[in-house]
Length: 146
Image 1: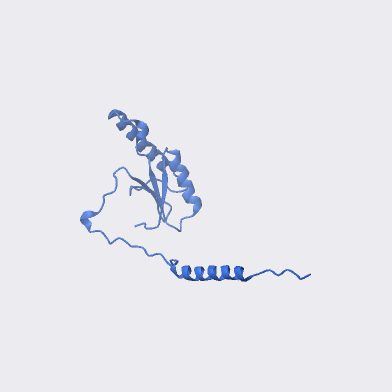
Image 2: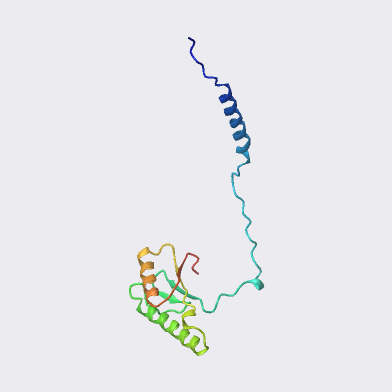
């Protein structure tokens, strides 16, 4: 009796065809993604910020500000900040009720602006203080501080 032999020729043919396909397709893969950056807009087309935007800034000396208004306390004692934000939201709710608008739909968004060198713990304290005033949502802005 003779030993059966496996014919590997069709297997090698398939492998060579696959190898050729992968060699052809590989250079077509993008090696980088190019982006188009927008050109800088002239001054007359700049968008003005929303007047109801509230930005809490944590200074280098841990002093707090709301929209460039100083004397809001510091990171260790943010009670002035919390009471000021609570007053702002209360006044907005009163104005909304007077204008027959749902008081729950008032703008309560607060941005917290801090340097990247500000410690995580300090930012977390301010987030808690802002949250205690009733703000929602709360967003963070890092760097780019004037």
